[in-house]
Length: 355
Image (cartoon, rainbow, N blue to C red; front, side, top):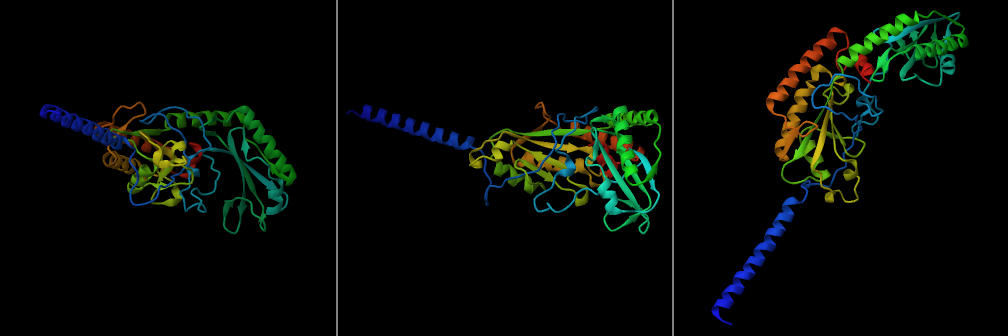
């Protein structure tokens, strides 16, 4: 073999080795990033799907996956939402006056099985004279007055004539069983009030959805969880969901992070490659004093930087600081409008109305 042939063979071997090394580097580079320093975690938190990156005006279909039902791991025994309390601002209310004091056991036995009328919550409360407050009926107590109510509106729409009639029938049956007197308001007046409240709610119902999309390498579920926890999110009870907690845990989570549930449930999550995840924010469910939007924005920008991703809207359009500032300004105006109607964001009434 001549020196030329030996030289060409060496060059050829070097080229082949370089190609192999490049291919290996390229393969490693495109593997999903994985969590470091611990086992894969399974996030979880149930949340409603949203569709628009900016506050949207209009009715949103109701979902069983409501924000107020989302419970982070380790808090399964903690109620995030206070018991329902009827209020004339958003409920049709009627008073039931028994001929004689009735026991809590009798009230509970006479209660209708269903706590809904159509798509609206229905509730009965009893007046406890010792505490001078309305409460859910309890055994071992005597009550001289009760009230029944049905919600005027929610995200399913306004109370209609059929639902009002069902409310009357259900409440009258309860009154008959308890030997109580009850008077009902005018149906058309209450239905008109329901429509007006529903109109206000539909014009001030804001839900937002952002995305963070990978710009370099894909992510494993564990890597997303690890980085999200560092940004302040907590794992929940359902795979693929996490929550940004409020400082006041009784007020419920501020926002939800969610990604592909099948990836979270994969036999080997390390082999799952995710290119995006969602950040969801239901404005009406978080107290203004918690600064939920500012906290979500800070967390999103942290994740965008450390994960080498890009913050976008649902369509993939990047969101810069100017757009995010505009959203914040619009939210402040929305908060003012809700406050003026005594339906402050994050309040029990707002949570019920926007559900």
